[in-house]
Every structure is written in structure tokens, then in C-alpha cells.
Length: 483
Ligand code: ADP
Ligand code: MG
Image 1 (cartoon, protein in one colour):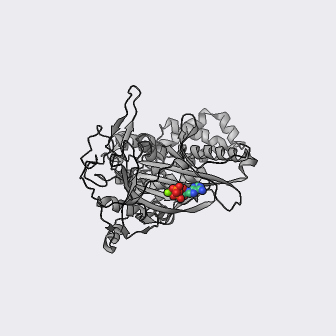
Image 2 (cartoon, rainbow, N blue to C red):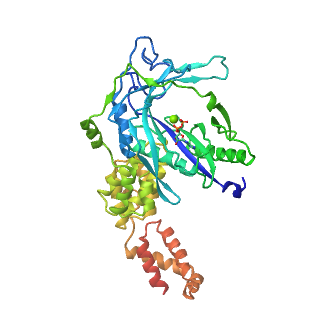
Image 3 (cartoon, rainbow, N blue to C red):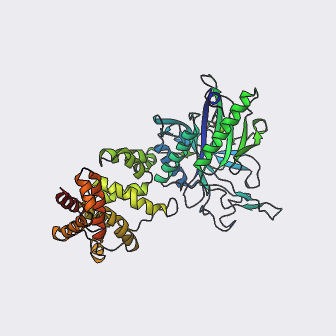
């Protein structure tokens, strides 16, 4: 799209993010809420909506939702009722979804994101709790639709932002911030591919400076942050093209097809259901007492932004390090645990951001299983600090051995593998002299002023010492001999 045309418009985005809660049982009954399982094995008569069955609220669901509300600076509603959202669909056996319409558990609040122009608070409209629907499965070689009710009644929170986002990039950042928060709070695994975190984007465009927002289009069906951004970019172009042609944007729900990069209409606003919300008569109101709220506040962990600030001020880390280390709570905890044993915080940071994270990257996303204990890794880091081994040897030779045998003492390991650094002048000097003798021309060049050649000499010394020569001492000796 022509940039001049694009630049005439302001993009307006509001997100609705659904997060599946990590409770053991479902929101209104005791069926297992675990992901997967053989179809229709987590289904009691309540899930299947047999006549006469009654819902009962799972207390954990309310607690998890309140935690998210506290993390997002929301007001927690003290008096809540539950509403029926009526619609017919094969994977919704009750004929209505139990949700919160008029009394969402959390109101207002904001989520802070990092944008190109600094931090920005994105205001929230609400967070409410509701139940998930079952799954309709359409198999290629079947003419019938298969129904799996395992997911039916699993607890969700829905986080609804105000239309305050102005770019697809910021929208993506908001989703990843939500994912980080729910993982820190341990209320949702944040897995977008498995659908435990899902996002709908509402998009409109308006001419710069316009007083009123344009007609919004809701886009569904995006299973990664990248696709959220791609779908929004596509929608923005589609709307601008329509307006430029003098046509109208229609309020509708569209679905984005990742493979074709195109979207198509699912239903227009006119055909939208009237959900006939009304208070559910089977569930009594929920009252949040002062004591309950205080108890929940007391279980709140440090949040990523607080930790990031702490890492910058207390551990004196660069902002970049603090950001990377607080991306996940497990990594942040691991970093802090090492720091209780080793006070060279920047070295610890380098180790965690480098070798530790690259090992973790080979594992499944969101899985933290690092075998080496913080104190053992601290020992290895100190060995480098004390020039017993070089960083390269520690990272490339000792570290992989430690991962394979996490109970080994790194010092013993280094001794066994004959990797301890040689800081003995008597053994390094002969190597230095040998190298100088073998490269007389290079020595001449060096003496004529080509000082960079020192790295070539160092390379030779390190090679001949099998990486064990103490580089500081070796440099010293080389300089002495060359001058
Ligand atoms: P609806 O009544 O259609 O459900 P809501 O006002 O409840 O609309 O808003 C639903 C979502 O759409 C919210 O995330 C909100 O921020 C977003 N939204 C509302 N108006 C616009 C708009 N003009 N452009 C983009 N997003 C919008
Ligand atoms: Mg709405």
C-alpha cells in the first residue's frame, strides 16, 4: 500500500483475550479440566447439561481471575452475579454460556507495554470469568461432525481492552505481555497453539484527527502473536482500500486464514445474535470479602516489571539483561538463586542469558527443566572469575558435562578433564618463545607497528597449550618478548 495513503489514517485496535485457567476441575463442576484426554472422558452429567443438574462455582477460578485483576491494577467487584448468554450451537449443550455480563469480576485497570516511544499503559475495560465451549471436529473422511465435550465448562477469563492500541505491533506486544503475566501468576500456561490463550482483535481506521472512531471489524481465529499482527495489518489495508474507493466498512466478524493470508466474513453485525443475557437463577451471587481479597493479595508473586526494575537497581544490570532475564519467572528465579551464591551479577547474567538460555531453547516452549543447581553453576562462574578456567572452556567443555552429570563438582570435573588453566610462567614461557621463533616475519611486522598481529600470536599460544594457558599471563609474556 502507498505509504502516503496509509499515513492519512489512524488505526484503532481493541483486543479480547481469552485465557484458559489452570484449575484442576472445571468452572461449575468437578470434571477434570486437563487439556486433551480421550474425547468425552471429562464429562459428567453436569457438563452434558442433563436436566436437573446444577452448577456450583469453583472458588479457584475466582481467585485466579482476581490475581490477574490485581496484576492489571483493576478494581475487584465485591458483588457479582453470573449471566446466561443464550445461543444455540452443537458444542454448547445447555443452550447458553454461563458468563459475567453486568458484574465482571475486575473492572478498569491497565496493562503496561513497551512501545517504540517508551512505556504505555493500555486501559482495560474489564476482566470477566466464563466457561469454555466443547469442540466440534470435522474430519476429512467423515460426513458427520464429531463433538468432544472435554473442554466444555473449562474455566476462562476474558481480558477486554479499551480501543486504545494504535498499531499491530503494540497489539502483539499486549498479547505477549498478557501471556507473560498469566505465566508469572501461574494461572494459565499461555500456550497459543493449543488454544489456552486466544485473541480476537477489533480493528477500525479513521482519518487522522477524526473525532469519531470508524466502524470496527472483529477478527477471530489467530493462534500466534505473529498471526495476530499479520491479521491486523491485513485488515487495516482492507479497510483503507475500501474507504479510498469510496465504499463503506461493514461491521462484521471475519476470520483470518493463515495459509492464504486472506480473511473472509463469518457474519455481519445485522445477523448478530441477540444473546438475551439474564442472571442465572441457579448460581447465587458471589461476594468477595475484605479478608478473602487480602489473602489473595498476599499470594501475589513479584511481577515481571517489578523484577525488571529490581534487576536494574539492585543487581546493576543493563536494561537489556533485565528484560531478557525477566521474560519468564523460572529464568528470573534461577538467576536470583545463583546470585545468592555468586556476587558477580553481570557474569551470572551473561551465563543465564547465554549458555543456560540456549540450552533451554532446545526444550519445549514454556518448559523449565534445568538440571544444574544454582549453587553448582555459581561454582563454575567463580572458577572463571578466579582465572581457573577460561570462559570459553567453561562454557564449551565443562558446562555440557555438567548438564549430563549435574551432581558433579565443576572443579573436580575440570581436573579430571585436564582443563584447569595454566597460570604458571615456567610452562607458558617456552610456548611463547617457540611461537616467536617460528614466525620471524610476523615479529618484524609487529615491531614495525602492526600491533594487531598480537591476536595471531595469542591464537598460536592458546592452540599449543590446548586452550589452557591463562590468557592474561600469556598476553603479558608475549608483549614482553615482542617489545
Ligand atoms: P461490542 O458491543 O460490539 O461487543 P464493545 O464496545 O463491547 O463492542 O467492544 C468490544 C471490543 O472492541 C473491545 O475490545 C473494544 O476495545 C473494541 N472496540 C470498540 N470499538 C472499537 C473501534 N471503533 N475500533 C476498534 N476497536 C473497538
Ligand atoms: Mg462487548
